[in-house]
Image 1 (cartoon, rainbow, N blue to C red):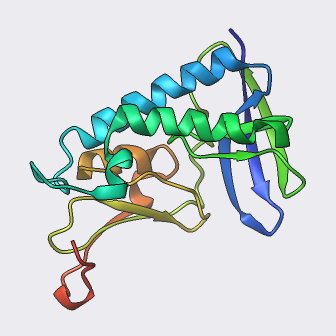
Image 2 (image 1 turned 45 degrees about the horizontal axis):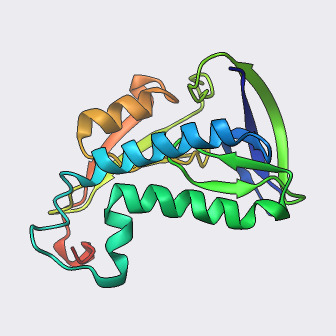
Length: 184
C-alpha cells in the first residue's frame, strides 16, 4: 500500500508546520489502519497512566480514558464529518483536520511504509525539555514551533528531541517552583 504524507502550514499561523497522513474519502482501509494505531496508542498510554487511580469515576470523560471507546469515537467523528471534505489529514498522535483552504501543503512524500516522516536534523533547531514538579510527563518545545507529543520518560523525550535537533541543542529544564506547578 502507498501512503501519502504531507508537510503542512496553517495560513493563519505560518510558523507552525507538521507532517500528516493524507486520506481520501474513499480510503476507508487506511482509515481503519489509523483507527487501529490510535486505539493501540491510547491503550499503551492509558493502560498504566498514573493520572487514573483504580476505581476513579470520570463521568462523561470516561470515554477518553478507554482506548476502545476513544478509538470508536475517533472514527465516528471522522465519519460524521467526511461529507464536508475531500481529504483528511491525520498526524502521528491521531489528531486530524480536513484539508481545506486554511491549510497549505509545503511538501508531499509517498512511501511504502506507514512511518511518519520528520524533518531532517538541522543546525538551527533548539529543543527544550521541561517537567513541572511532581508532574508525570515531559513536554518539548522548539524554536521552530514543532508539534511534539508529551513523553512519559526523559529517555522518550530525548529520543523525540533528537529527531529534530543536534544533541548540543537539546536542553533539559526541571521546574522547581512549586507555586507554578499545575494542579494534578
